[in-house]
Length: 478
Figure 1 (cartoon, rainbow, N blue to C red):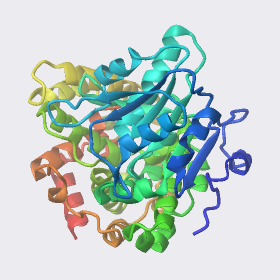
Figure 2: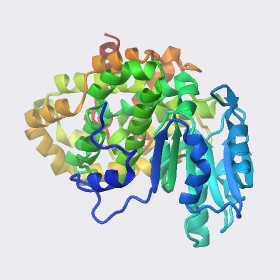
Figure 3: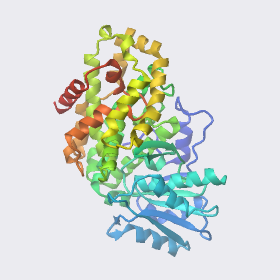
Figure 4: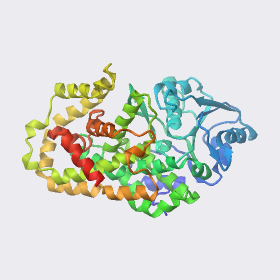
């Protein structure tokens, strides 16, 4: 497989993507190199130097306590040994898990890293998504608070699991609700193919699933733009990523067999995913209705002190629901039956709805307050853009055609998931949510954030929630 835009050739890559329509004018991608190679681990000392680190100065190595192996050896001791042999003095910082047994991206973990930072220090993160997000955001906050130059920061990716590695944003728990905060890029990304090959396969499957969000998220983003809620929409991300359905069908065997070529292909696609969002200045290209469903499931797990399921696989299963939702919606929606005046609920009505929805999860009201603080922005924009909604009603045939063109069928998503031996049902997640949890997440996902997705329209249109869920879940199962 030859990607149209290959992040493994960094200077050519930067030149080529800067010519894509929608690339932010005048913005230079600050990543110095992205390495996707067999044996890349042995280049770590040189790549740290490229990032601006100095072996004579402190090097903080951020990791968690998860045991990882590479070619039969324990990975983290191997990295520390290689660095010491090359004349570096790495200082390990091991992030302790919380009561769920996992490390989550929250202000407590970010604060632990930030306390260890100083102006003459470099940072190497060794881990998957959460460790990467914690380390990069701690570096970002330290820079902002102290007014210092960015610390040299190198990401050693340990699994093909999520798009955090090249993203300048950090999904972070804020009062129990996931929020995307501005963060920073790495100076260098290191993808050692043997490390990625030997990661737990469920993490590789999750990386495929996370990218399948594009099967519905492009349409969500366009819809929000067309309704006047989010004017940032461009086709930059679609052009950069390429035809994901064709790519995954072509490379499924290489990914499933964990060949080094397959690991490189998936790592590059994941890197492109992070860059697609960062250079669009929004997570919207690869985060739509499916992600807010996943965020509500995470919220429920976090409140119950349960571990979180694999993010990408949970997102993939939510994508089966949301692509089914698009099919149901475009076939059911009848603009002539819409009473426009009834589609604009008041602030008091929606605030009460949010408080009622999340009362059982959090009797303190903290979660509801955080959700309302973001949701009210969307509600205000929805009221202010009433004329855009009326225009959609008048131009529904064309809008419908565009939405159908931007989405991919749930059958295709399922076929790709089957081809990489992914879980296909929520009860196959570890730990599994109940179907009542999934129904709650599907129905209440629009209430947790400002981004408009397809999930908001049945709510504004006054459709009966249980009937909407029954139709969508039935279509997904069918």
